[in-house]
Length: 336
Image (cartoon, rainbow, N blue to C red; front, side):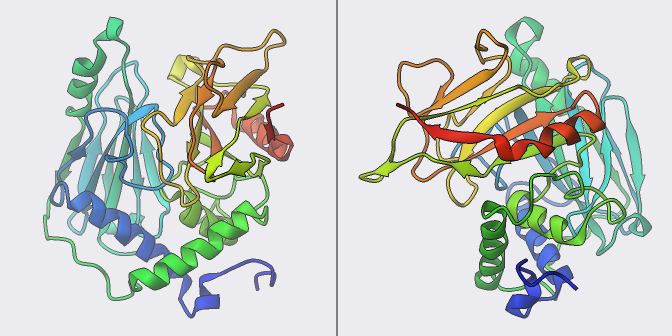
C-alpha cells in the first residue's frame, strides 16, 4: 500500500494500468498522425516548439517514432555507425522492452510486453557536425533504421483508455508530487522494465517524462529548487552552477540542460544547451544563465519555467547514481 502522501491514479478512480496505457495511447496517436503503423515518423532536425511530439524532449538529438504491430512478431534494427543512435522499444505501460545501439537488432513478440499488441519506437540520433556530414549524413543513418513486421493491423485505442480530461488530472497531480520533491532525487528505479523499477517512481516517470530511458542509458536530474522571480509575467535573470556529470564520450555520451514550461513542453526554439556548447568556469564547474542577455551560456525561458539536466550514456551506472543522489543540492538562484 502506497504512503498516503503520494498521489496514485486510484485517487481519481483510475486503474494504474489504465493510466499508464492511456499515456502511451496519447503518444502513439501523436505518432500515428504523422505515419501509419509500422512506418517511421521522422523529424528532420532537432525539435522546436512546433515539432515536439512528447513532453520533455531534448534538443540535442533528432527524434523519430513509430507504432509497430507485434502480434505476429517484428524485428527492429539500428544501422552501424560511430554516432549516438539508439532505438528504445516501449510497451503500452511505458516499460522499456529493449534499447538498441548501432549495429544491433531485436525480435519483438507479444510475450515480451506487459500489455497489448503494439510497441512504440523512440529513436534518437545525435545531429552530426558539418565536418562529419551534417544533416545529410544524419538523415541517411536515420532512414537506415529498419522495421520488419509480419502484421500491420491499424491501431485502435484499448477499451481501458481514460478520457482526456481525466488523464490530464492524473498527470497534473503526479507531476505536482515530483515538483514538491515527493519522488526524491534518485530516479534510478523510475524507468526501465517491470523488474527493475519501483511502482510509484515509475508512475511519476510516466507522468513527468513518458518514454524516458533507464539509468544505464541516461540520467534525468530534475532541478526542483528554482528561485527565479517573476515580474509582470516575465522571468527575471537567474543562474544554475553545478559540477558536470561524467559521461562516456567514446560511446557518444553528452549532457545538456533544457528548460520547459510548467507542463513540460518546449517553449522556446532554443531551449537547451549541451556540454559541447558550454564554456566552463575556472574551477571546472559550469554556470547556465537564464534570461540574462549578453552573458555566456544563456537561455531565454518562459515564466514560470522548469529545468532538467539530462545525462546521456553516463560513464558508469554507479557514478550517475551517486551524482543524482546529490541532485537536491542543485539550485537555480536569482541573479544579483
